Amino acid sequence: MSHELPLRANLSALDNIALIPIYHGHFNVAESNRQAMQLLEQLGHAAIAPLRDPDMSAAQRFVTKLARALILRRPRLVIDHPGAMLYDVPYPAFLRQLAHKADMAGIWEIFDFNWNQPLYSE
Image (cartoon, rainbow, N blue to C red):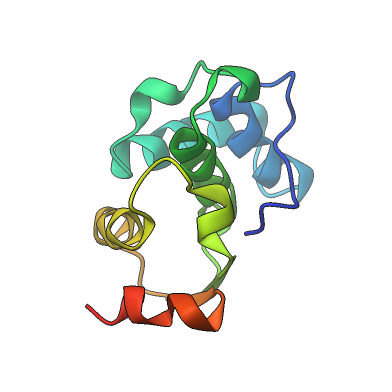
């Protein structure tokens, strides 16, 4: 996940997430939409499903990008400079909260500036 990889502005959060397994050829549209909605519910952000990128807060945009990364169920998630994406919430706590809700068995790696490392020591 990176702040440099934008969402599709003309698509809703749900469509942005469902697009990934459709693109990779794993599932049809109906199944991809079902999985995307299930993931948003699991993350505790089902209400953002109809929102488009311009209508989202930074945290909502981050959750959409996170769900987009998680939907493929890969064993490792790399988050690049979360502070650049989460400027509207205290992001280490927000990330911990999402990680617990996501209940993912994989590894979440966070790459951030060295001076932000103490933020993750909790």
